[in-house]
Image (spheres, one colour):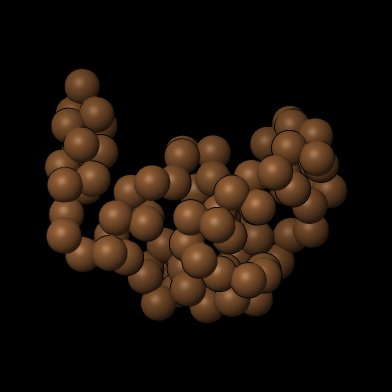
Length: 86
């Protein structure tokens, strides 16, 4: 229940970057984590036990939600927003 409350509170924020991040699904955050480790889609799919096509769909959704263009800009964004610690 606490996780749900935290998510709802995150969604109420006025900070546009926090709002973008709050829109991410848990699985999308996992994908970001593995991309930040330098893994390719195949490796991410193996780790998460999902298809490569699903990883690709997650990345497309992540790019759209965070308004980034590619893996490199995703990692830069994630580090700046403290979604990843390198």
